[in-house]
Image (cartoon, rainbow, N blue to C red; front, side, top):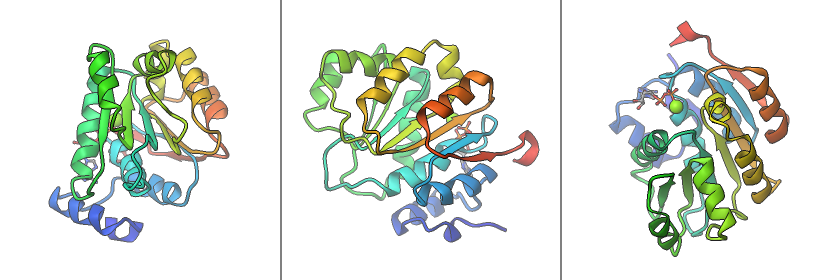
Length: 211
Ligand code: ADP
Ligand code: MG
């Protein structure tokens, strides 16, 4: 049976996975984690509940430089509920990594509180596209050091009408970056977003009954 030990994850992450009783990687994790640790872009399709957060979260956390207080990884999600949930799951996974700050910015949250918190920028920022572009307009958020971009639930991001905001965010982050996109479905709009935002992506697909 597959195990996380074969995936070249750091001791801090492996110890935490054992504590969380994550013994076996899910199929999407088994497919995506090696490609992401290898520096490739990944486009993945898998059902809800298949473990996509850890599939992008573990390689993302492993690549953060905790010695630098700047936004290095940006995770775009369609809703505030998901922003809160993904931040929580990443914090769970990152518990044994010192000096790591993970924040979530989203509509309905206090803008001025978010702006004040940027005096100490998080290395990992989870957010909804609308709120993140608000920060860009008001020049309160520096995304010039982002090296990792995640588009989570890409089908929902587009269904909710965030295409323009995503374009603006893509303009605000460096071209030299690693990107990962996950989606439960792959309509043409999502394929177009993959073409616009990822470079030579490895496609990983898990059939609904694989988990
Ligand atoms: P998705 O984003 O694909 O809908 P999640 O990443 O939210 O799925 O994961 C669903 C649930 O499965 C979460 O509660 C998560 O903590 C748990 N989980 C993820 N990976 C594993 C694993 N390898 N072993 C056990 N539980 C896991
Ligand atoms: Mg998810």
